[in-house]
Length: 254
Length: 326
Ligand SMILES: Nc1ncnc2c1ncn2[C@@H]1O[C@H](COP(=O)(O)OP(=O)(O)O)[C@@H](O)[C@H]1O
Ligand SMILES: [Mg+2]
Image 1 (cartoon, chains in turn purple, brown):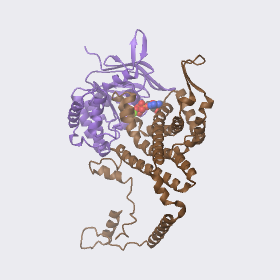
Image 2: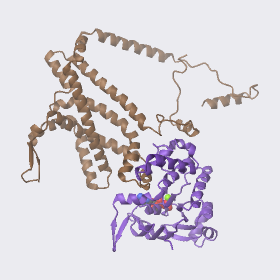
Image 3: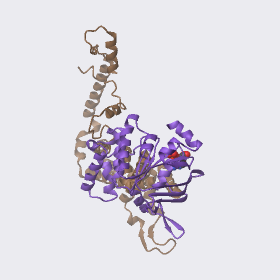
Image 4: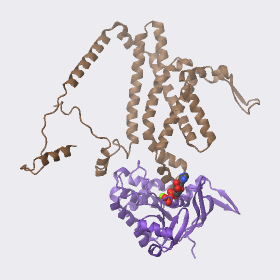
């Protein structure tokens, strides 16, 4: 029996006195796509950032690929990781942001090869070959030498996906990847994500695209005010939500 | 704008034979006053130049004689050395102070803040006088355990030349200003950039070096260029240390011997202007280099519609000369 890719056990995250995550427990199996939905401010981004150790968890345990995130466990004691080791953990987790966050001073190809050459010390020629292959995969082989400012939002987000994939991640986190896009550009990004899901990538996707959740998601988690309100098969949850809060939210986005 | 008026033009003539927009052939507006003011100013400038060329006090033959006097060119070189050394130290220390101010450690933050308070709050001339008196304040420089017999000890006067003190004085003052410039540059970079870099597994240092600093350069370089130019001129204050081999102090001392200060002031000014001009050219190319991917100065690879939209940020504006030139 294989262990899950992500295992959260009572994850709590506070900013000062503001408890944003109030004990999140969930698992994501290998190769699965989990869609995370919920109203704005419910803590979805914070949860993704915790998985990538961009935020430090205050209580509970968070495991990615059976490794505790951000800490070393020895006996019943936890030791904070050295920043270098935390950075090493992040290499294997790809993240895609709502606002793309491409490096504006680098071309599309340079964006994609930056981390592999700098962090993984892959020879430049190999990284370029792989980068071209990835940009081709997201349909941008003709835009390799363009700077982000000269690309449409949809193209930028596809470059961002290629950039994350260049590190050969075992897990991909998407934080509202299509929310900043003009409606006619949403499809091209979702298509790339669907292809990625089909290829067997484990993905956690924060999204308001319920069509995507229904079609691609293996599970759906509805979060509100820092707690998991409801979860299950996307088709079931979307068709017959059991909680009032889920119903109220879905009636707004569907 | 042009499209609008054209469209309106065609709408006004619905029965026009040509279905295309009717192009406008208006009589250009004349600007006679611009011409008059321009001519008057040119005449004034010419007068000043002719007058200066003939004026005895400027003593142009002496200017020519001293321009490449060995003492003067050596002093010019010394001024350049002072500028470069003080700026290099000032920039490095400024980066350290900027990072300290941005660090979450309250002690580091306060120390940096205190440093800026002292060095920006007092005139650099006064600071230079203080540095000149350092040997009086601290007779020896000791290395060892505090309050114990030092391991090594130097006599301050012997260890630190006036030249070294001048550089230290200028550099420590400069660091305070550079710290603010660097801090503004680092803060100008979107927080999402560091987040993306970290998410890719970069360390803080890698993210700084490859992602944050290159982008902040666009904000940092123009004011730093100004600082270099300003430093070149501030070196004339090192006479307060006292250090006397810089361009201004040297020409002043020569003038004191010859009782002829004005031509030597001109000589010094020409040298300062020469250096600042070179620095401005260097600044131009640096700015161009770091504008990659963002500004009009960057390598533009495609005239995409998106870029055409971006050009609106800098509206072309009415070209004041377009009419008159023809
Ligand atoms: N760095 C931070 N400091 C303080 N509060 C934060 C920070 N990041 C997020 N929050 C707070 O956490 C809550 C959840 O935010 P977020 O995770 O972004 O929600 P979502 O992504 O579901 O919209 C919000 O109330 C927000 O104000
Ligand atoms: Mg969010």
